[in-house]
Structures are given as C-alpha cells and as structure tokens.
Image (tube, rainbow, N blue to C red):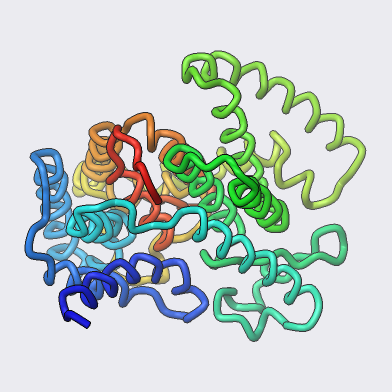
Length: 368
C-alpha cells in the first residue's frame, strides 16, 4: 500500500479516538497526538477569522502559563480551548466527510445501551474506567430504587446524552437518507439518551424536537416561553405527587437552586477590592493546583468564566458567531445550552463534536 494512502486513512481513523478515550481511562494525550498528526499535513486552509481566533487563544495561553505555571496553564488552556486542536486537525484533512455520522451514532448508542445493561446485571461500576471514584455517593445513585444509569463514552451521563443529541442534529442536517437505516439511526440514540436518565439530556432532546418542528428559528424563539410555561405546570404537578430523584432533578425549583448556588459561588470567587481583582475579571482566576480548579463540575459556563474571564468569553463567542450557519446551528445551540449544566462544550468528546460542527460550511455534503 502506498504510504501516503495509509497515512491518510490513519489520520481519518484518528478522528474517532476521542469517542473511546474514556473507556481507555486516559485522555490528556489526545491533544499532543492530534498536534503531531496535524504536522504531517502539507496544507492547512485557515482563513482570517481562524488566524484571529488562534492568535487570541495563544495570547490567553501565554498569560495562563506565565501566572499559573506550565501544568495548570496547559490544563486550563486545554479545558477552555482544546477544541482548537481538533479544529485545526479537521481543517488539515481538507474534506469534512471523514465522520460517518450515521454509523458513529449507531455504534455510540449501542455502546451506551450495552453499558446500561451490563452495569445493571453482571458488571459492577468499579470495573469500568469511564466511571469516577465508585465511593462517591452520586456514582451509585439508584434511580427508581434499582436502576444504575450508564456513564457512557463521555464518562458522565449528562454529557453523554447531550453529545448524542448534538450528533443527531448534525446527522439529520448533513445526511439525506430516507430509509430504515436512517430511522434506526434516530431510534437507537433516543433509547440511549433515555437510559442515561439525565434531565439535561432530556432537555436537549426536547430542544432538538422543537427545532425540527419549527423550521423557522424565530418561531422556535417565540414558542419557547409557552413551552416553558407548560413544563413548569407539569413539573409542579408531579413534584407534589412524587419525591423521586428523577422528578426533583428536573424540577424548576432544583434548577433555580443550582442557579442561585453557582452564581453565589461565582461572585464570591471575585473580590474587586483586591489589587488583582480587575485582572481576574479579564483573564480569569489564577489556579496553582488541580484540587481548587472548577473544571468538570456543574454549571460549565460559570466555571469557564471563572478560569478564562472576559477574554475567554470574547474568544468563544467570536468563534461561534463567525462559524454559525444553517448546517451547524442546532448542534452548537445544544452544546451551548447543555453547558449551563455540565461543561459539554469543554469536554474532551464535546470539544471534538464542537470542532467538527465549526468546520461545516453552508453547502451540504453530498455523500457520507
């Protein structure tokens, strides 16, 4: 086999690696690996907005490395803007049909469904690398008194279900196949999402169904308050009937409690009377050890602003606004909304999906 052909196939196969990394138990090596493989590309097509965003990220990274040290600077940088590594790598492939979205969705859904079966029958969560410390009480939460939800290929049920919904939106917008395989590619992800028992995943699925129903985005915005009102009434009714954990986790009162808690923690982390208060507002808090860094917990956007500041928000907003189009807006909207809970868009897998969505242009892909 010609080495150039083998190298191209290897580079296309590499795009699937983030989706299995949590089953391998390691993940940080992905960024240098993708950077090294990008170096094998003879030509990378970057336009002005790409250069601008990369320049801003480099400025941010230099500041973090200077004040937080090498390890923490890299950790915060990869958490906040690791998507740029995937993005540049995808751009180096020059052809964005490297993802077979239908097959990817089917495999990930089957994997999640199989995991749900195994952890509720034969396999303790202690033996699976994609689960956090099993001694943490929330890991062993038994829904309905008996059900252990799967953590999935993202190592977190909310993120796993949110990424599945985002991939569903990308598939339906970029692949026009009206047959049984297409229907199966829609049904299995829904089953997997339901098995994750995540209020965030269910919300993401509802948003996708609403976006499908209201082709006009302005109609979606207009009807959203009505649907939220219906949700509030229904959730209030069931809250009075049942005290089960599933209902309380998606109730308006629980969401309001989390919102108030996180914003209180957020404002407490900034003291503008300090000499470096303004600096932290612009560039984020300075963290010198992993234990105190708010990475991977609830309310991803609050944590993101805490570590990245106004500059970080400017970079991420500029990235989204300059790349948004009719082919990727559903996926990006779902990633952005679900990040208000867990940090879907800053997750290792979420970053790769986000980067892929950013690469998509207005013209539809003819064949996948």
